[in-house]
Amino acid sequence: MTARILVVDDDANLTSTLELGLSQRGYRVVSAQRAEEALRQLDAEDVDVVLTDLAMPGLGGLEFAERVSASHPDTPVIVLTGFGSFDSAVAAIRAGAYDFLSKPAKLDAIVIALERAVQHRRLRREVERLRLEVSAGGLKLDGVVAVSQAMQSVLDMISRVATTPTSVLITGESGTGKEVVARAIHERSGRRGPFVAVNCAAMPEALLESELFGHVRGAFTDAREARVGLFTEANGGTLLLDEVGDMPLGLQPKLLRVLQERKVRPIGARAEHPVDVRIIAATHRDLESRIEEGQFREDLFFRLNVVSLHLPPLRERAADLLPLAQRFLTEFSGRAGKAVKGLSAKAAEKLVSYDWPGNVRELSNCVERAVAMTRYDEIGVDDLPEKIVAHRPTRLVVNVDDPSDFVTLEELERRYTLKVLSALQGNKTQTAKVLGIERKTLYRKLDAWGIAKGE
Image (cartoon, rainbow, N blue to C red; front, side, top):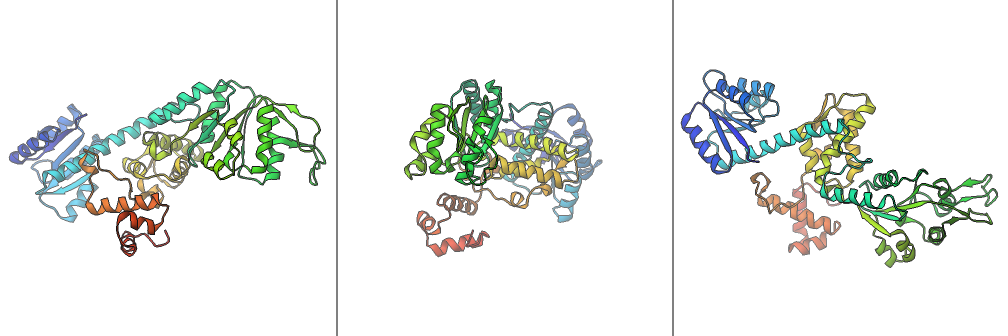
């Protein structure tokens, strides 16, 4: 939607010039020559951003900014003044202004400031909308937050396969929420048995075998009493084999037999007993590559991979980020007994610009920390981890129309260099070759950007 800008200045010529210039840039512009008149307009119609002079007769710009901040807190105020001293800038920000520009300001600079302010306002409103929706129980289905198209497709797949006995293989990077999705499938399956999960990478082969299949008393040295395995424990329900790609190769044939025969023989037992278990497997590894490396059985892969469900990383499902953050905030503030209602717009901006290598798990940890740290009813930038506050994005933005998304050539070079370095897993020799520069030149650039040689 086209943003609506209120220009407030007692200089009629400047007001007319701004109206014309901003209208040509696609804005809807209204104006007032006195702050008192502008306040009446704000009460009468919705405005996205206020652009005001500082020195005006009657109600001054600083007091005007304070009044707008108090009565219309979601409307950013940009102060435009000829008195461009540092003290004036500090006073304007303290009065509630979002940004500060000195006269004479070029139209391009004003447009960039306006676009940022418009985005700030929309983000602030989105945060508030999400807070209310999460509080009302929305945005969540069986624990899965799905606003993005990618996650909507995941929900559609869940609804299709949940009521069938079919095995499902869930893939995705660590921290993307594979167990949450597995639980959602179980909850919708109608199966009356329990949901049981086991991490196949968390224990040695002998212990994992006993954990899965159980054992009889005396089956081995420390087997002082019989143990029921997880296949039996999950009878009538669902068994999640988490990180199945790391299952020891020697144990895979026994797992395959159980999946084929639907019968379990505990360690040391003579007889098998039938089990009715829905199998869901999850892994962050590329199982087809593991097969080529001889680390995973191809026949077991086909048995597990009847239906494949891939979870995208958080950086590829940006629409889910703030809803997830708000859901975690509501959960953790309730646990901590703190009345934290939401995120500030600036904190939300920091979360959105971060790349989240740890995905949903990292976001959850970040929000939990912020709830613990904050002294207020809103998470601010100071409550976030330093690495998120100091983060500079490496994403390369070229095909954009928003002037605020454009960057300098130096920043463009930095982002592209780091993108290549990341893609080549930190190999600086190969990175220098791809960039067409000397290795020592690459080191010099990285040092200038504050990146140590070992990073």
